[in-house]
Image 1 (spheres, helix red, strand yellow):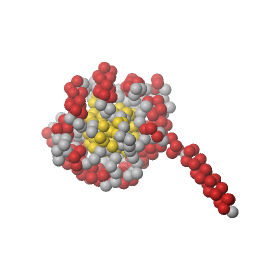
Image 2 (cartoon, protein in one colour):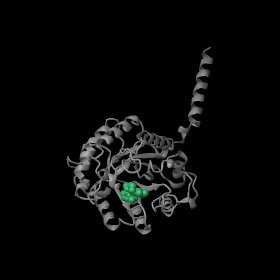
Image 3 (cartoon, helix red, strand yellow):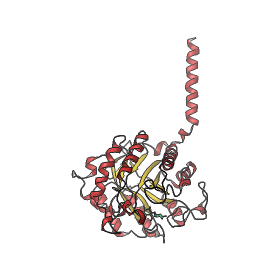
Image 4 (cartoon, protein in one colour):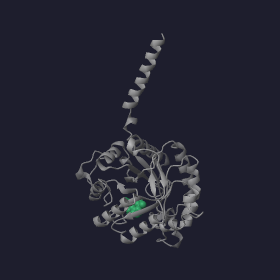
Length: 349
Ligand code: IDC
């Protein structure tokens, strides 16, 4: 009798093991998956080893929802060495989360799908609150404080729902502006910090995962947070695992901007490039390969993580795919735009 019971238990254990091995969960890549934290300027894994993430951002989720699919992510991981996907959720333009044309329910379903797909594949996933102020009907979106209440609710729900996911990175404000559209649209580092002081504690109630904070002047002013490092005013003093955003478009941003990044890194600022491309700041125009290679050399030297803009077939240089490509995954080299092909090359080593 006792013997039979033991055999029964052993059979049950074997069945559970077989189920686990053959279920989707097993796609997790043990090498590229684990909880990250910030140490000095670096992202490090559970063993304290520096991690440099490289990836690609979706275009606006409402704009190009179909690219959020597991086969696309798998292709990017296997063919492109991508280990992080950024889910870019516009707050305003084109069915953005905070405007009447936006469908919050559908956007949350897409985010969930992106998170689940990335998780099953052992990839990291950035959820990007893509405030931008590009829409002249809603310029106030240039300042993250404009949709503060919506953001509080969004990040509260998100961090609660996914509190056990160690692969999610919270990007709380894409690009605070610099006042190009008038004095009233000037966003200072003090404004961004006021916003961050509202959002970070809400996320921290649920998780200590990485939080990336946008910087003024379309996420290019890394000097302001760098200058106050070590003081009580710094977000890095008040909270753990904080990084700061820098964005570049290689044909527009060159020596000067590279110098600024290097200066901030040398001051000890942990930077995450959550958006870059080889073309100009409009997301279009010519590619500057030389400048792009210089940027990549700098990022690799300091192991700064980076994410290319954008996974779509929109008729613009920064789109990963050619306009003529209608495939949502399983791409061939000919389907990729020149900026897409360049990304694949740059991520090869
Ligand atoms: C661009 C898109 C383009 C869209 C425009 C306005 O590529 O299709 O029409 O936004 O929404 C950023 C922004 C990012 C921009 C990108 C290129 O974060 O939303 O995307 N860019 O202009 N900052 C600097 C450049």
